[in-house]
Amino acid sequence: MGLIVAIDRPLEEGLVERLCGVASGVKVGLPAVLRAGVEWARRAASSCRGLKVLDFKLADVAHVMEAIVEPFLGYYDAFIAHSFLGGPGALTELSRILEREGARLVLVASMSHPGSLEVYDKVSGLIEAVIDEVDPWGLVAPATRPRVIGRLRRRYPGKAILAPGVGAQGARPGTAVCAGADYEIVGRAIVDSPDPVKAALEIASEVEVARRGCGAEAG
Ligand code: BMP
Image 1 (cartoon, rainbow, N blue to C red):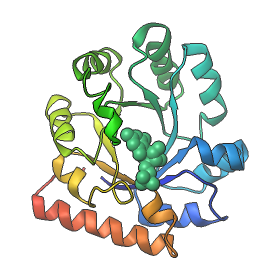
Image 2 (cartoon, rainbow, N blue to C red):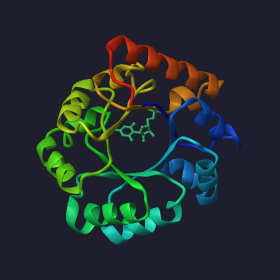
Image 3 (cartoon, rainbow, N blue to C red):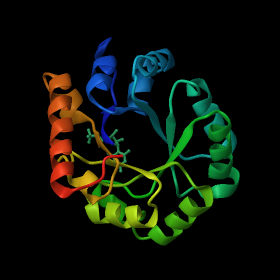
């Protein structure tokens, strides 16, 4: 339960390790890996003692998604994919591959930006049918729309909910956890601050204070 730092650009050597010392884990994104490379992404994961999530927002047929995740298996704990792909030929196979390798699947259930209302949130019934079918370990849901988190939490009591949108996108630390999320994902508010470790500490403590205030369970 707590804070996951989103890393979407390469960070100086040692910073991922220090951020993992104060946060619950990291989520490494495609822009960082494109710029710094696969070896950097593996080293970053190896230096982190928390939850390591690789976020390429996978959205392809099964064999291509398998080729994308393969270099990172054994380094990352969880991999994020879009849910609109459906099961057969895509998420069903990805889920099996990850399970076989001891890794977890996280599906995007809804997104934090306003455009999520145009498609993702209009078809939430279909998205939830895919989630039921594929049965991922976790879900991504928007801190910017805590009611969506609340609905998903009631429907999926056993799944991890990871909530982006805190800080730069406007949601306040603690909002998502109080709505039922397990982790709040924070990127720019931490990595672009002059002292990222201090910023992570402050945000982690704000999340914890809010959690105690609203009585949300610690995971
Ligand atoms: P930031 O805190 O800098 O806004 O970064 C948010 C992070 O969460 C980014 O890594 C982005 O890819 C991710 N994210 C998001 O912003 N909205 C979503 O709906 C899903 C995400 O994974």
